[in-house]
Image 1: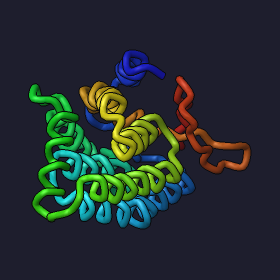
Image 2: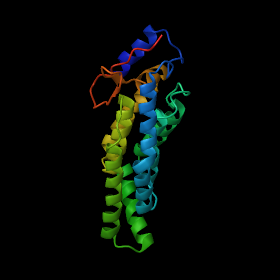
Image 3: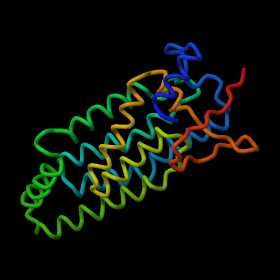
Image 4: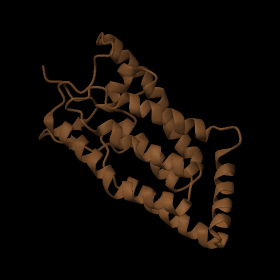
Length: 218
C-alpha cells in the first residue's frame, strides 16, 4: 500500500494521532517483540564487531542507528501505540543527513578507512579485508531477521545495504521510511500492519507492494 493510500485510509477513519497498537492481536505483539529481541542478538553483536573493525567514521555511525530501527519500531507494542515513532524518526533523519552530506558519504567513508588503517599501523589491504568481513557479517545477520510489514522491511533493507556498502540503496530505503514517517497516522498504520494466516498467526512480509491490514478487534 502506497503512502498516499495509507494517508487516505487514515483520513477516512477520522484518526488524528490515535492509531497505534490498540487492538493488536496478542500473536502480532508477541511476534514483533521476538523480532525486537532478535535484533539485540546476533545483529547487535555483528554491529559492535563491525564498529570495532572499522575504528570509527561515518559508516560506523550509520550502521549503529540504522541497525537499531527494527528494534525500536517492534518493541513494547503492548503499551507503546506509536511503534517507536519518535525514536525511529530521529534515527532515520540523522542517518539520512549523513548519507546526503554534500561532501559525499562514500568519499568520506573511503577516507575514514584509509586514515584508520594508517592510525593502527596496519596495511590498508589487511584493514579493508577485516573491516569488510565484519560488515558482511552485519549485513547477513540483519538479512536473517523476520519482518512483518513494509517499515520493518525497509529498515532491514537499509541495514543490509549499509553492510554491503551499497549506500545509494540504503538511502533509498531510508528515504521511503522518511516519507511514511512524515505523517504520524500513516506511520502507525504501516508500522503496526501485519498479515495473518488462517490460524491467526503473523505472516512474514517479503517485499510485496501492498500491505494487508489485519482487522482490529472491536
